[in-house]
Length: 515
Length: 115
Image (cartoon, rainbow over all chains, first blue to last red; front, side, top):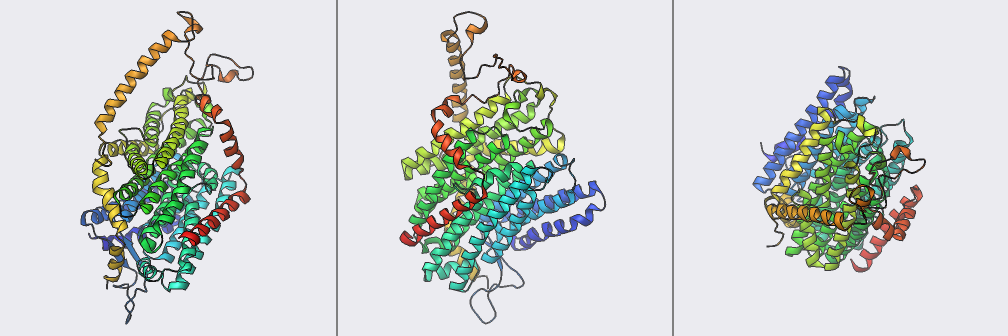
């Protein structure tokens, strides 16, 4: 099966699955759960096949909606909506489908005492659909549509448990301020369309390089601000610390693991590298990103240290990790074309993937703890290791990986970022290390609590049932295995992903040569 | 080699680290504040929290390591920094929007001047 044949089904299957969910739900609970697993499993199979195809062939896959060629009849420029997937996009597809599948399996046990699950599973699949759309699209307005699909599903899922004030408050805040960020992005798209008369990313890249204008710069500023917000960069990260802990843990895993990556980091990288590329001052834009990265990794990790709410701690930790990813992107842009830039960008992409696994794991564990003990207050969780050994072991692995402890996967990606940032500018390397010191302090507190003397409360707890435990174990194994082959993964997947991302010409020529 | 690392070296370093930690623990037991062979006197000072101490009103937490004071030294040393950070996280929607507007203005200003 070639990539072009797979691409439409990556959208059709979750779309069909989501909208048929209420009908399937009429057949009962088991049917609904089986349907959710089948749909997300089939999407994972397609996502893996697409990644394998793109990675092995090294090609950029192009799919035109409603026609064979993106070019209009009698004209030599693209007028149709296209989906364009390179190695970076395919890697994101794999990440989204894998973590979403884990979250769906986990939900079978975790959400079993909740009601309204037909809506829940519909929304979770729509959330996945929105993220997949963002990862594959080559059209700017199409990107916006998928971004909104993803965002609206997120708002609804954050406020899914409407019996508590926390979810409602967080959902409303997230929706309100998220909509403003989305409108900034829409305004940027409108400006570019008004100036250049096209929405196709590849063709826009061509137009921008031929005629860079002030309008293009204003649009870029709007994109950067909106997408920094969506990725949870400091100082526009505060919604994240409200929204991610308030959501059900399976959703927190998707929000922290995927949504901020796809809707923020991936979109920002795609716009910066594939649309703007060298038509702007990469140095200036790179330094803007670096400044926000440094603030983010210090503030996020430092705020994690002083949290007593386990999920809030994890949410702030996500902010901190986004700082590292942004640092890699910023250096990749500033040192565009050099080996340092390449390694930094490879580290950023690698850490994006790693962090999706690590944070999904940690949030799923937080969910297990809440499920068993009904609390996420760290001061009440002393001695959890005694009664929940498997869960605690998985947490230990996840925490060690996110701190960047060898030989786990987090170390490999952080190492690339440390190394390139230290070579680029030693001060940046030092800031990154300070961020890690805070990150370590935050997780040591949790581990110290878990391995402390058992309190009466935790004595009743036990490791969760299979549907909740298996996703945790699979993610733990993935983290350990990826840590054992860091250099191979970096060489075979991350560096090629960077090379295709930096090759703007290939992105444009695939579009125009698709005639 | 750029970006090179080998998992096995780090496993080795980790094992050495564990041995060092064990030796440090042995040394602390010998040289600690305690003046006795058994009982409270042998306790090693890890943090501001004494797991054995019963605080009036907090009897239910008696004898548990809660981890809340493990990073006491760090949080105390950076008290001012954390106070500023906490004060900044108001939870108010208007503040969230203000920060978004400030960030947009900053990025736009920089790009228009130097971009």
